[in-house]
Length: 273
Length: 257
Image 1 (cartoon, each protein chain N blue to C red):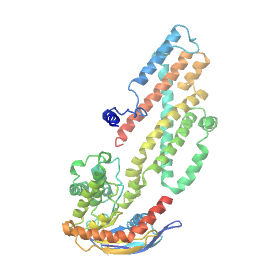
Image 2: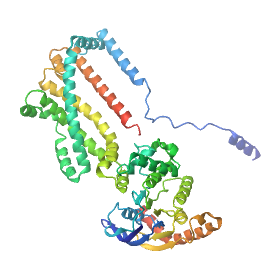
Image 3: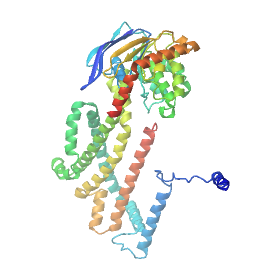
Image 4: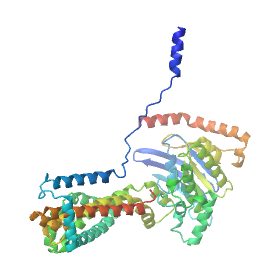
């Protein structure tokens, strides 16, 4: 009996560390992990092409694509195609964004505009805008206008939806606070609703930038002499896959740059978050 | 300036929330409103402050507010309602922006309000950088900047920890000490009501009706003294006995909702 008690007592005094069970499930990434993975994929791709594992006609090597981009740049063709696309995207995006913000705010602020606007947006938003290009060519001719209008339409609907969703998401307690101080409607819109909706509006810009890029390429593939979309299509028709992929890389870089610009805008305008 | 609840009744659809509530808040008086959960205290305050239309009856004002008052009925919100994108001083200045005041006059009012709430050193900080207590100070500072005649306070301390509540309660006592400003103070906390109010309106369970109006039989200044604590505790017990059974019923109702 006494021996057993002594044994239990010795057991009770021994310590062991509590096992750590809280690892993982943290939404964090390594700083250079993505770049290292990208470099690795490019290196494998280059090696596979160089030793003849992959047919260069179907998948040119990264070096061949880089050479194609260099040739395009020194020949001036790159700027010709890029500037045509940028002009269409810029004008179309600005027009669609301006109209989308105006309509989105109207829907967010007015009961009548909401009833009418949401009905129309729900009916028209799902239509692939590129399907309207032939109709727009009939209406506006074969120049720049139908391509710009296609982009503007695509941008408009996404912008309007993100704006009125952003307005709806502005905390009601802030609006009530402003009303309790007799702050006029226009000041509430400028000082409460606009900054409150801005995160959703900027998030919408990310989507509309992608939509504009998608639509410009599609529109240029249907009917344009210059532009990245037209260039990619021509290269494909001529089986110049290095040129084709050069166009794709340029589009990817453009998308990255736009993403960075919007990220910079978010940092500047939403520093309070 | 007096604030009068004149036979206020309110329904949300089929749900009767308030039933024929009438009382008067005289100039400089602090009236607390207590009652079981869901009895319509916050609804009543929103109606008194003109943020909600009652189904019948009306909030009314009698007499003129002080000449320098820019917003006679001013809310202090439970959730602070601060603009997260604005600094402390911008939040305090916000209700002054649409007035006729010059930038210099606005600045003077903001400086004074910040000084009275000990926020001068925090004027350039954003709400997210502040503790809950400091955020509520900003809410109070913003309310003071418009020189209210009556503060409408909707459970202003309920989102705060007990130590911060105590500190802010001392601030309220100080701010309301001279009788220049009245208040309607909605609270669950009977101790807060007993420490701050001149009169306590006790509402019944939903639909809220006035069960009793209890007068606190001592000045606010006297309530800090040791012998006053027993009397205040007795007063709290008296009010608690009025609402205890209904509070239990209300809690069960909420749990089964």
